[in-house]
Image (cartoon, rainbow, N blue to C red; front, side, top):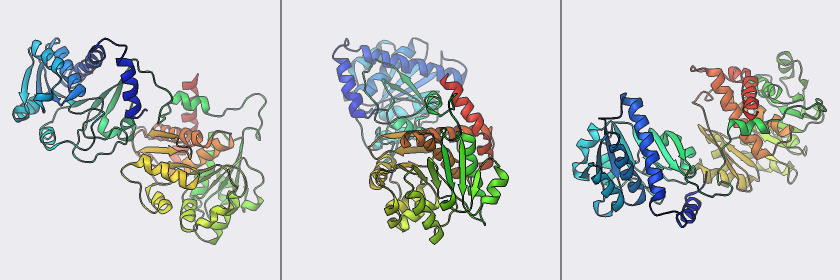
Length: 476
């Protein structure tokens, strides 16, 4: 995803070498194609259906008007509602009128919106900020049909996904040239996002989003010369005698993901050994032996013993994934971080409550900025859990993963995620990429395990091999 400033710069370069109006016609035609598809899906036909255009000033409104003109050729009844008639895109408005589309003022718009089979949102584009103006918000209240947004839902901030006031909720969004941050930071407002290539020339994105092939290519797999040590040895310090579940889940996740070897260290050693006989289990981190990465925190407690375990792991000189109680310990006893060797990779995986403890305040509406700030403060990769998971590195790189439903919102799910991250760290992945790949695989395992019904963390754990198989197949 690219920020709006970079998109506009690329558009200006392209417009300088493109015939006037050509890009708008291409964009508008794509909107019309998707509008016709939505009409067919929701009403069973296209010709004779009714489409209302919510038209603001500038090019976004122009896209909607030209799309309306194209839809008229398909026999669609099109009504444009002009919020700023004096600022409506002149060429687009003329095209709609030539095609015999109706044009109404905002005052006459409610009836047309209520009768529409589909509404096209062309109120504001990438340059707008803040919620909908009162006149636009009043019109949107009359919308009951599916909404197709042009570039982004009006009223949603394009670079943050924040909704500062009234805004449109789209069923589908058609965007041009490249996806923008809003499309992944606020997917519930955007609906299904369709990208139309218009030939923009862009460098590396501002936000990254991995797909299955990306994750499959990055996932460590053994080669003919590998052994259990070269594949990566993951250490897990988790759980307690009273609450061994976190230890079983985090350790099992590391076993099923990639690790050539997993060492467990903690008071739940007997339980872990009985569930995962391939794990080398000991009662203390001081007896664990050499590892290539540590997972620490789930269920270790926040007292003296937990603090000593965390300090030992942080001082081991290998990458660390710190979750759950480990993040709480860092927040309440920040001196524990003194044990960390300078430059040792650290991944923190807080949910919103743990993030608030770490930073002194909850993630703001601009979650992207909040996670970047935390990554800089702790000189660590920070993975903020949520339906939209954000992974930020200290150097400013950001990766976003949109969950497949809400199946991961179950007790113990985070322990499974931490085991995945630890195994990828032990396998040698860059910590930022390891966290992003683990988040993707975790979400995929949740979807595969759920099959449309709620699922436990144990079910998510059991689905990890299937998820990795899907990812590897995608990379072939």
